[in-house]
Length: 245
Ligand code: GLP
Image 1 (cartoon, rainbow, N blue to C red):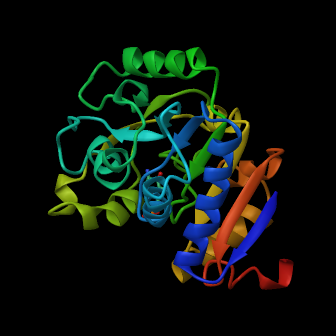
Image 2: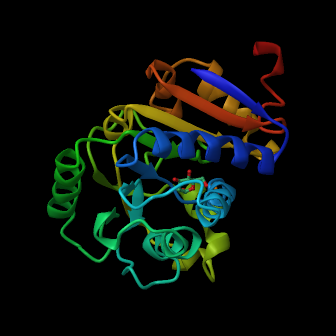
Image 3: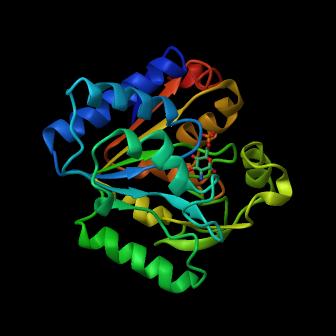
């Protein structure tokens, strides 16, 4: 596990965007696993700038997002589908036909999760998976649990995640209670993983996830066992791990 130290959010975003853009330059038909949340927004902004300058081209890429709220249609302004189009896809040239997210409007969970896993497999698996991390160590929507999840599945969101995500909705009551998410195994099967973490409020969980024991109580801790993970974290997020670096 490589820890890449960044000064602040912007520096973190540029460093992670560099890794992603190198991936796409080296393998133009890369399968990219993408994430939502506030952490990756700066990365998408940077990649859009480089795309506009002609430095990186997404025309042959395929994308798979980590997760989607169950019960929100693609057109809902809080759906991850909407988020990704607004913050990234609409500004670059990845073909619409190669953009994949779980379908939040499909209420048959089993069918949707099977479809999604089959689509990832048919694309040849994920070359590079971008991740953020929740305050409780969740990745995608894999919440702390007694075991690590496997493939794409439907989860009940924890109170802490509902609380953390309510800022994007009118009230906590409007936050969907369930989501479809790639499983921990799906994430671990990605050939390369980049996880970005910023801010002092993540300092405790950074120490636990990347320097503590591997446990499903801190889902991101499993990344310690992956052979190609880069943790791009800013000084604030690393502020409680300095003695371990
Ligand atoms: C959500 C997403 C995660 C994301 C997490 C952290 O719950 N499902 O994929 O990593 O939020 O969000 P933020 O980057 O805003 O802290």
